[in-house]
Length: 440
Ligand code: SAJ
Image 1 (tube, rainbow, N blue to C red):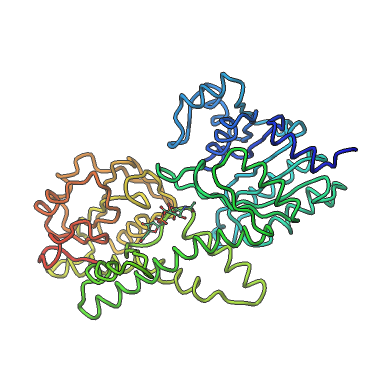
Image 2 (image 1 turned 135 degrees about the vertical axis):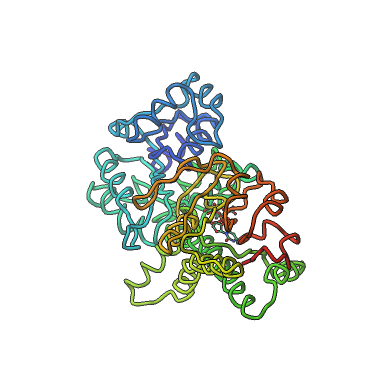
């Protein structure tokens, strides 16, 4: 009896003859390509960035979590290829789209990367192909944007001879305990058959696959994950604002609450919300709901509080200088840490950039230090990390700890600084009730 397209495709996925393509070789796509190649598939990574392609072809890695020797081994084994040529998609059976989904300057979603990838893929999509979108986006994107261009307009019957699903990426760069291989992977298709085909594909390589009933459920699960974090960070930031008015130590309050062994999850206040996920993904959701005449109040309120925090930090600097009869204008302020979170070199959406900009607007002489980021370029200004950290600490009128990299010697900084604003409780108890320290 003739096999259905679904049976044929599933068979090729299970025996690894299905050819795999990963569109986008960033911090999501390259680890995914490696995981499928390690599972025995022949994988082709496609990226318009010639440098990324050439790095992989040389057997090297441009992603911190993937060792170069792993790339070299897979490339020489003929299991991993890389190209800028999208036409190879005509020979592929299983395609995962891992492209960026940033925000425009207006704060609206920028779907241009998804649209470009979809339009390229639409030139080559064919029967018995499965396509999975991994890029974080608003619920409905897979069905409303990808399905028409890849299915209907190409005369393909989704769920019959073409399979389309969404599977949110859960990559946390630098994390060693939870990786692409062992982090449970949610997958939801346009139809149940799509969910099944996509789940079978991913289950060949990943340790845990969680099929859900639709692409929308999978899209929304990811947004819940990251909105949960954004709102809880907004909550503790507001706790910090309330505690400062009450004269209560918010850090002690949070540590005390965190002793509750159930029903509580610790988040800590900070100078704002950085990164390419947490501050951005929830705004994809609130944007979609606005189009449906609904206001996602929690997201909008949390976003308002989180984006206020850099201003709050600047008022703390004003307070610290005021204690010494100094104005911000003309004072030398050293910002410690520019990355959006400790011990990484990622500047995306970093609140340090806002703090520096606001201090400069008030006329402060601002300098910064970050062991991972030697030069800052933002909004038309550029700045080098100070070469001699302790000399800069000694000569600053105020030191602002914005990112608490673990490599800093906080005891020495506390010793040498004239005054410190600590937005991360980096100084711990040594900073509490210390006349030269102002804490968030
Ligand atoms: N932040 C706080 N207080 C907190 C936690 C974070 O102010 O209690 C700030 C950080 O300083 C940073 C921003 O929020 O500026 C985001 O921090 P994050 O810890 O959420 O780190 P991200 O942005 O790298 O989030 C990633 C996410 N991973 C994916 O989206 C795949 C997130 O889902 C992970 O939960 C998070 O890593 C993690 O747990 O490390």
